[in-house]
Length: 87
Image (tube, rainbow, N blue to C red; front, side):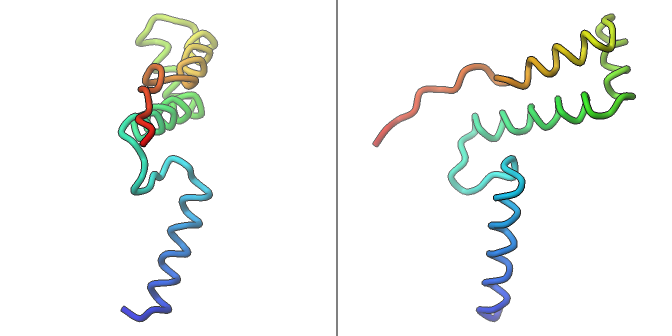
């Protein structure tokens, strides 16, 4: 692999990480990864009306209530963050 091609791939990867925070990197924790996955799932369900209608029907709630609850769950979808080990 030429150094120019390697540089281009690294630059593209850095741009991807800067644009989409949920793509992760080598230093991301399991908690952060799970949080990104849950938020992406909730955002997708809220952003696609048929999925939101299905979820509301399955839960026996109104569409507005289901949307509100999923939006609220996006704040801390995996609970509070674990304590950090400061080295």
